Image 1: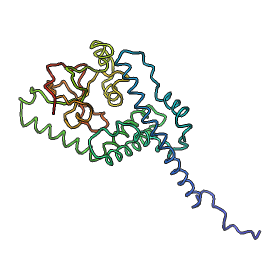
Image 2: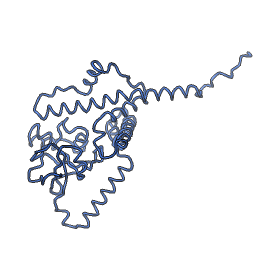
Image 3: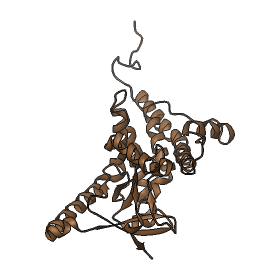
Image 4: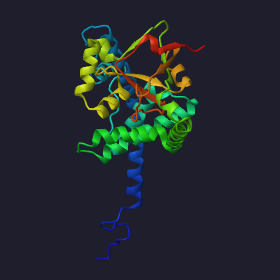
Length: 291
């Protein structure tokens, strides 16, 4: 009796202090999780490259997996790194992974644009994963969220505009366009006279054909966009944009492919105008290199 209740919180109503503390804790979790994500993104790319190189050379694949690589780095290099404590931290780690992955910087555009796309890709990827958390859709939604974040509405608009322009040009040319070879480009090392899919390099063309015949086309295209070497993809990447090809190798090859040989990859992450060719590109389909 007589004791003041003015300072007591009302049940069911968050106080300003508790709300502010929650926001501060979430922000701290987000930003403290980014460095681990950066290291994880770079480590995952290095692991994929190492394992792909071993596969191409026919060696036993014993390069560390991304999980093993992180354990080695934390033990030998960085020491224990901060781990996300909540959903905000998971978003921070996802942003860091996109920022740390070298693949985030191969697309055309300025560095600030690429960094912004990486941040949006990380946020979109984690948002998709959390939306489908605990369901079979978690993986596909994570992929779709990352792709939408990277492309953004302007990238999607450019893709749609390009597709409409191609359709209009084809219609204007009439039947001749239907049977005319199409020009594509591929960036790779100098001196090549043919190209093979990773599956063909590992087990020959028959193996590459078996992978494509037994697999789900959508899954194979999705996996190819993430890591064409692990598992070995039956596809070879080409592009309709020579500037994109220039960013992927020492030499830019000009190709002429029959209609239907190259299929657009709708799961490409970086708006690279990517097309996929199954199994091989023969010497007579390579028409030279660009200066």
